[in-house]
Image: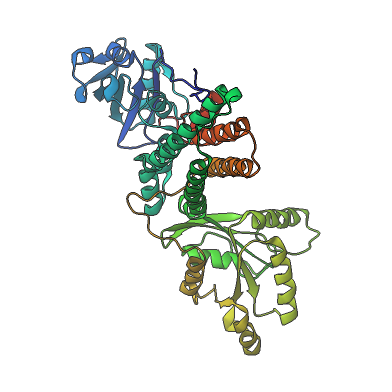
Length: 464
């Protein structure tokens, strides 16, 4: 009997050799050029003057020169990685050369002439996955580790790359596969009315798996903040002090400050790490009705940015505001459904009676111009996005693709429970269990498609 549950994507073998710059573009002390493929060592040897690289053991470094015919390009160090002992599990070479972009480009041109081709984005990591170096979730963690901007993001990516998350998913799949196989067996003996998969045991398993899935799903809010940071829009009416606040938060003159209303047209943004979280502050055009076509476009962009924000710092100019105008602005804010902080600016110019009235309405009072209570504002932000320190071994969902697959898995398992409650036949149970297995398998790549892989690895940098 053939199992109906199978891997839909088989590892492929590559016959070509790829090359790319592995270090960042631009001038640096050293540049590293990476090759991978069956002919990687042979291709480099054709342009290398020094030891015969083909006779050297793996994980050794050799000094020599790269030449193009009779022309010497430069001196280099060549690192050799043999077969299964390399990152991609195929012959690989890394060439360290002076960090001049011209030199790196010339070396790559020589290697292309020798038969290599330019690597696609993420192709080195994709080959490592296809050759079984790690699973898909771990491969994605490589990109997360490269782009980590905080220590928490680095640790979360490192945990995923080490396989903790993958092991949990693989364990869940194994338990489900066992029951799915028994139900499939029942279908093969359908006329004999036998029950190999005990429904009470299946229910207990699904409820236990769903309990774990819910914990993973709930961790995404926390993980998403750690990985992607917090888009924080600074909004308010013209001259409320938005650009001044941005400059005060960043402690630099990032935005132009003027008493003329409508100065800010395009959004201006920069990032700042607070309490281990990367906040992306976005200064926007002042909200008002205007006949100026360019300013109106800026106002519309402000509204779009507010809808996409994780939180809005809404500034109110206390030197001109009234209780009625504040209530009107807050009504508009509430309609967006986005978390916001009410920030009363220009506290030094405010009517004391108005300030006293607003104290009971959850305002944070500042003076952006002289940086009064900047720390208080930062503390309020951090109160809204409390995160715990990520430690070794923590399993945390930071990837939107994984989050969506976990939701779909949970929904499929809920359908299995509903089917059992309604005495639905085994073929429907098997179909929903197969769906759950499919979604879990897509996370680690045990079930995947070429289109999915292309989509994932296209977001990597070229040399990785």
